Image (cartoon, rainbow, N blue to C red; front, side, top):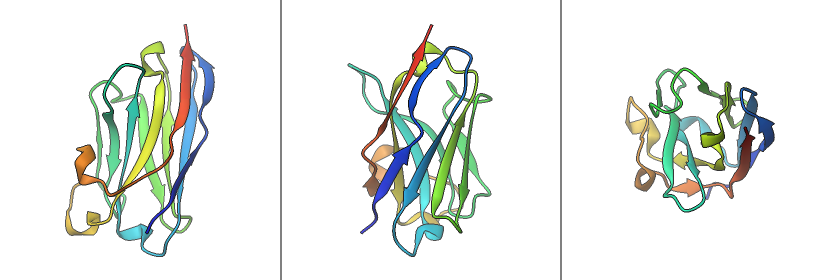
Length: 128
């Protein structure tokens, strides 16, 4: 069983930055693919970014490409999401997720059903 705990959310003005962190329990973090998803009020959960188990491959939703950066530190069992040039439409609850079969694939999953463990979420609010 893996537990994921997100932190770093908050209120920021448009154009600002936030860095989300997701700390994972367990000894096999380095074998997991990791992803970030978000859900805005009244909308479905959507993919934001993903990173493979080794940190060598990343994927981003078109809406965040060139503004957000996903990274991981396997020694600290932590994955990060650096969010720059934030827009009001980035307002949502952000969730990190772990794919326990991630080491089987060269590329990370981008679909929510492919992830096995989820954090409780952290609120990000961007004011205009």
